[in-house]
Length: 58
Image (cartoon, rainbow, N blue to C red; front, top):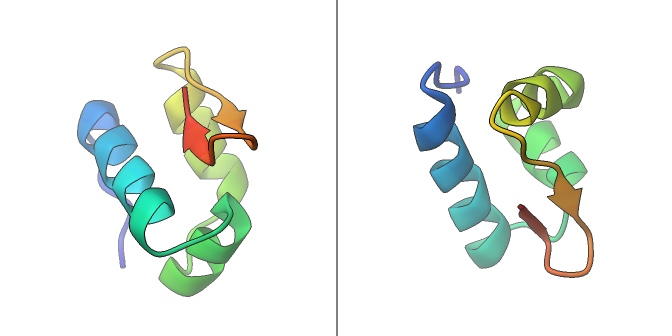
């Protein structure tokens, strides 16, 4: 699956998937064939970073 370009939609999608299907960003990225560094960069542009305790980008 191609990573969406709209960062707000990407954040929403990723957090939904982490809540419902995946236990980590690595598992999500492996399944969707995404580069985690690219994902982190796009979400960092929104001021978001991964919080392992909640398994979300906050």
